[in-house]
Image (cartoon, rainbow, N blue to C red; front, top):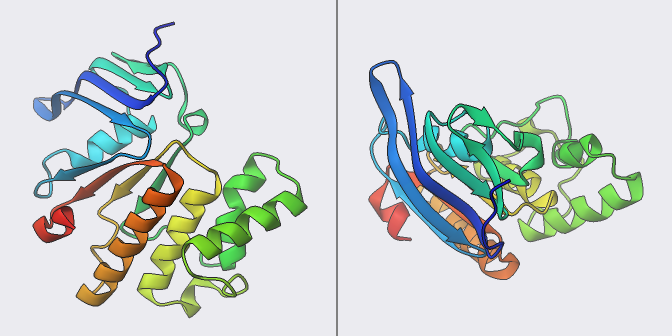
Length: 210
């Protein structure tokens, strides 16, 4: 199996994805090291989200190769490492929280799927809530939170599994200007302190510069 330097947490080589006659991603190559944040800036429909789905393992490239954590994860028409084993998390524009679960339940979900003990889950969820400045919110439901707080829960859920890389798909589009600035500060702070890599998708130039 192909492998590369593990210091490169994410590598794309000549990755292409077509939907019929439409080329959504065309011959993209990039390297991301631990702690680096790559921002993809462009209008809706230009292929940014498709590239994230390819990295996450939710789509297969038509051409090219993708390495995650030094190991070959995808190549033309084939998934080598499935999405659930890539140690990659996503933060979505729509928050993607389960309304019937508490904040704790939403954040704990990926840990429960991996079979962690209750004690370990409690410790990890507490730490993730501290990282996103939501300590004490664990018993609330998503409907009791503001948009900014819901997005923080989504970020905590991404952090709790200790991923190699977090993919951000227009995460601040539903927030007002003040909340965007607050969330950008928080996201920058988290990546500086944790060393987790990031790919951040946006159509907003000021957000990309920040």
